[in-house]
Structures are given as C-alpha cells and as structure tokens.
Length: 114
Length: 111
Image (cartoon, rainbow over all chains, first blue to last red; front, side, top):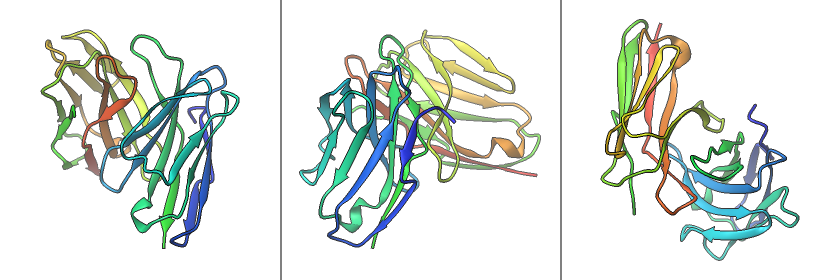
C-alpha cells in the first residue's frame, strides 16, 4: 500500500455513459498525476496538478475527459460519453515535487466499456 | 516525443537463473526509475537512479544508470517466483514533470 487510494477499483459501463473516478493522494503531496494504461503497455501521461492548478494536459485527453482537484487534495477524473476505446486502467500518482521527484501510484481503476 | 524502449519484451526463465532487462533511449533523462507491477495493481517503485554511472543494489536486484543518462539496466540474480511481474522503467525528461514510461518487460519465473 503506497498511501494513494483510488475508487472504484473496477467499473463496467455501457458505451455512451458517463463515469467518474476518484483519487486520494498521500496527504502532504502537492502534485497529483493521472495516467492511462492499456493491456500490455506502460502507463501514458494524461494530466497533472500542482495543488489545485491543472498544469499540463496530454493530447490523449480529449474533450470528453475532464479532471479536477478542487481543494488541492483529492482529484476526480470524469469521462463523458464513454467509448469502447476508453477501456483501460486509469492510474493516479502523487508526489512532493522537486529534484528526482518520486511518484507513488495508486492501485488503479479498471474501466471496461461494453 | 521521447521514448524509452525496453528489452526483452517478454522473458521466461527457470528459478535460480540470472537475468538482465534493458531500458534505452536516444534522449537524456535527469533520473530513471524502475517499477514492478502485478496484474490489476498500480506500479510499485523499486529504485530511482540519479547520477550517470550510478549503481544501486536492492538485495538480489542491481540497477545501473548509463554514464550518458540515456540508458539503464536491471539485473536479477538467482531469480525467484516472487520476482514475476511487469518491470517498467520511467523517467522525467528535462523540463517536464510527467513520467515517460518504457514499453515494459513481462518477466515470468518458473518454479
């Protein structure tokens, strides 16, 4: 257990539905990251926050994706109008920042879009 | 786009054998990290290497960072079934905060 928690662990939804995932980082960490991992691949960066500010978004993050970190603590990732191609493991990580920054990953949310 | 390529992609060996996994890039990284991931779980950090030429040992695992900071290797001595998993290298590019992950090496140790 790294101290980063994600909820739910598994989500099955039908195409076209909206889904929301939650990430609770390690409490003193001010950076929070979202990654997506498809089967057999390494994680790919989606977006990250420094406190409540969203500082970078990947081109992978289409208009159907939105992430928030309203009080600089937990974060949510919402996917609207899900598509089968959204099926993946969504990973959250947090870090303190600084030189040789270490990111600690949560267990992930496995999304299956039918 | 800065890429990290790992080799081999798959490796299946007998318990007790030694193995080496490689992580290579044409780009320079300020540091490299190695993670192990088990099915249905998030990656767990094994080590961070920061200095070019650095060697770190973690019990039976030896990690090396290339002198030019473009490559790294993971050597496991006397592999055990508990070493089975997906091994990922990852690094932040200079000036970026996000991690770029390697393609992964899926290791299976046969008892």
